[in-house]
Image (cartoon, rainbow, N blue to C red; front, side, top):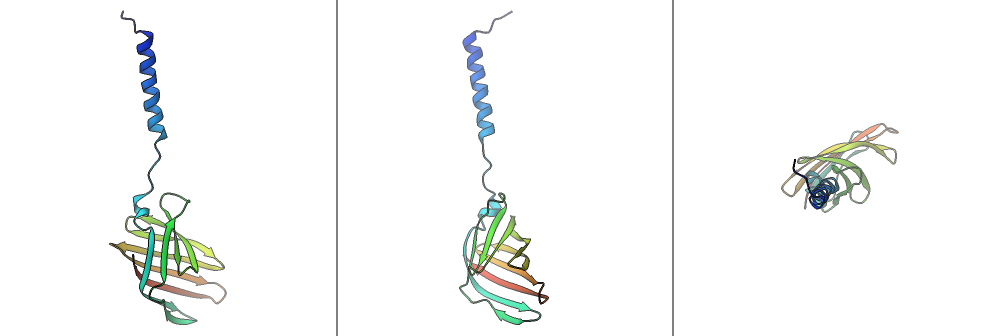
Length: 141
């Protein structure tokens, strides 16, 4: 029977420990789906359609800013004109606004990214009226 020397045993153990530490210390990179949405967009066309209070437009040049959200690798914050900030989930070339209530209004919606163009539709429900408004916009990076 062949004896394994103490130094070989220690060396083998050290290598295995380092490999294990290396594999467990790896942190998952941020979701690439989320990364492609991050940045500032500028509205080129936009409309507002409300059943009760009427229709309107979203001014060209209005900023749509998408930033990382700490709620998970696929989460982003979507800010429109600095007045509305909602959370969305990125998946492929689509973001989906999480169903959420902000300042008494309920928001849902979706957006798609093609090259540097974001097409975004946000539904806003006001229970006090009751009224549903749809904000539709196209914005470029």
